[in-house]
Picture (cartoon, rainbow, N blue to C red):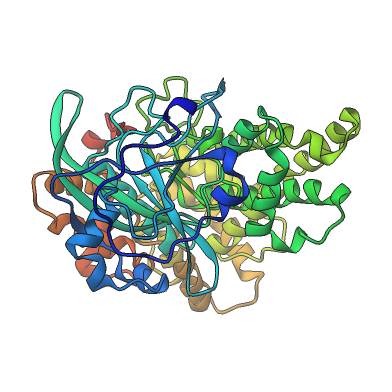
Length: 502
């Protein structure tokens, strides 16, 4: 880190000012390195999130200009340049790596959104950094559009997530798997980019953990700032445990498979981050793995809650000296909090499933939910379509569910479910409408996204734009969009894999 800490040579010009601040770099300088992106020959804004721009008090017209495109590609620093590359460590597939960091990313600076919340504006694919470990630091159009679309779909599903502001093409080609592809940079917005891996990095350096924890508390959990020191850091751990238990329950409720749940991809804020080899379930199968690098299935769909708990244990280890100067006391206190993760997850998941099934969330629905899981698994029923079909059942339309599960196989469970729904003493049509408000008709179907990204790589953005429009309005079914609701053909799903894009 030290030999490159001065950053690349400063360019002769700078772009417009964005109003950036740099509280992380100022308050915890040991986890950042001042840095600038690599010049690109012809940066152009390909996709821009105008609503998100407005929420950050940024003018969409200006953002599309050549000067702003140069900043959003990392090619030119802004006039108020405070850019840094962030250092972090991490457990990758369970193996500890002491130094990872932003290998192809740049934290341009911090802004405030229209709710007064401090957020990061961060670039992905902006060039090599001191943490690139031999990589080229670049990204390609398909991978950046993929993150743009899926992150915005997650936002539309009301799941905490980083957001995508823009994808900027660089005017150069990047080789992936021996094939040149058009280069691109993603500009994304996050509550912060602090990760469990950031704390794993700090814990192995003298005097970094407490200022990092204080910064994270002030930024994400300000209600804890006034707590006595002896209580503050344990409460901080508990807040992160709660945020992550809620997050993974929401992933599971929509069939989202992150694909690379390393500790450096587990945020302190409780937002979903780093949409690399992620995907959504078609057929319900807990053992589903999409990532080409997850050979052992560590990050399979059904393993995600347990993996998250493991990652939080690694986070707790970094806080031991802050919780108590007596190691045994700290271990006991942190373990007691960590042991609540499973119950917190189950409560969040049960509440989500009750809403999806139109049930009373104060009732004991565990057996009904477990049996539904078995029914869907046995018949490889589509996860997303199943819940919309159940709402149709309440409206007297049985064909959608019968197309997923033979009626003779589902009848016993359906009778139990209808009884539980009736126990809510609500109008069935109103319950069905409520189910449709939480069960998406549209998700980023893997085959549709794959086709859209192939077209975009070849220069045709229309399929991507159409798919983006559909998945960012996911709950309102429209007959003319029926193709977007259908699962992938079996011939596609059988060999489908996702990739990190590095």
